[in-house]
Image (cartoon, rainbow, N blue to C red; front, side, top):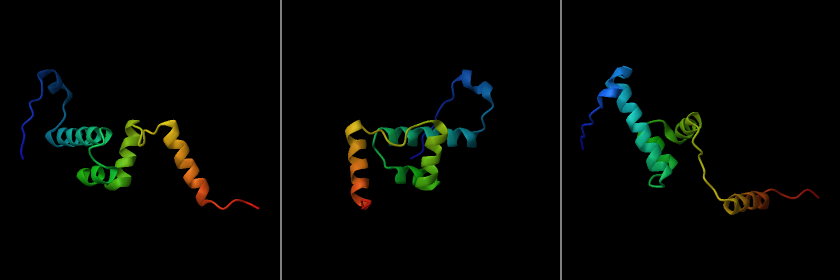
Length: 89
């Protein structure tokens, strides 16, 4: 599927070449799909060609949280980890 995007006149002044524009568009689209829960971090990394860890690094660079847990979900994760770690006697 090929889609053409028209760059509005006010953005032409920023001297972004076609390759950079495509990269930015891809990143923005993939990040949005991830944030909406439509794709996993692994799929996002695959789509961008950077792998899961690379995608997580991209999120960190952009200041976008990788996880968006409620307090209850976070507590459940802590409890699960605590169950895995042997208690000191």
